[in-house]
Image (cartoon, rainbow, N blue to C red; front, side, top):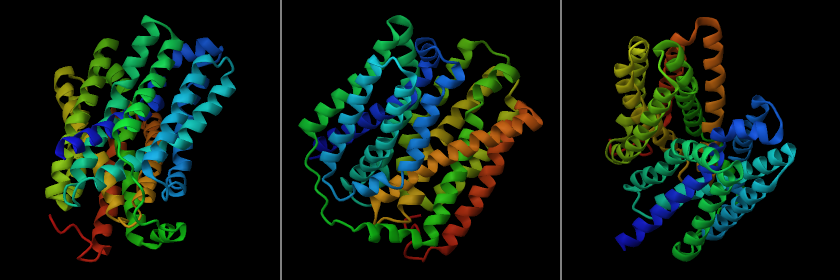
Length: 391
């Protein structure tokens, strides 16, 4: 039984990797997309931004619409859409059509990810749920970290078309694995849309959403400009910048593993202590900026806290606020993260314009302080029995 559950979680993890790989992998292909479709690099970037906007829009709605259907069938549907969309993308010659395909894939993205988190949590006891979800989050980290360089390598070594085909191949493999090894997952108690929407009446959920947006903004408001920071403040080579980004990404995976254990055994302490630790990291980032080796150490610690532990904390905040509507709650989580990423990147860009890249950590610190305030109010609002009793 344990081996079967490990396989179940593993397939969900790689499935999430395939979805995130399709979303983020094109970042490594932007120059080739610009050349292939004869558009500017900024216009090529719309393949990323339009996908993200579609996720933010569909996050609260699409998982809700499919919440009453057998989860295995829905996962196969989404993987099938991604396979078809990625295959079509190989042969597309019109940039506008490529954007339409990317938007469609973005609309289906939250369905699979939210159901993967829900299915992972449902496969174990309530106490072990954070640990199971943290394993699926490894797929998120791997998709963000490995997807870009792998796609970029295939693009440069073979062709742009083969790089796009790589996205399809991963999803084909996951479609087959899901079909053969994932058991049927009928919804035992189908909740009406009205019942699921009713969780929006809970103040604690809105406080959790606010905290999630602010905490994710704190991460991506700084991370979005890490390469620029390394180039202008640390003065390192492009190869060293790539190495630093890999260090951050690898640390994400370590953070995911640690997060599962922390949120299983001491959730209330974790959701409050780790944002404070991240504030300390951003202060160190300012002082270590000119020095490559100290900054590499800071980046490693930052990756553990920001990309790994914080992502799991965000999911836990929202899920524990609306456990009666898990698919809807996970959809809200995915949407909130994308809103946070967008706001954080905008705030970071504004701060750089006004103060300079060396102060980029300040954008993260301010967002973390507001996030901690939201968490404090949230914990105060929750009834004692709803609070994290295992802390």
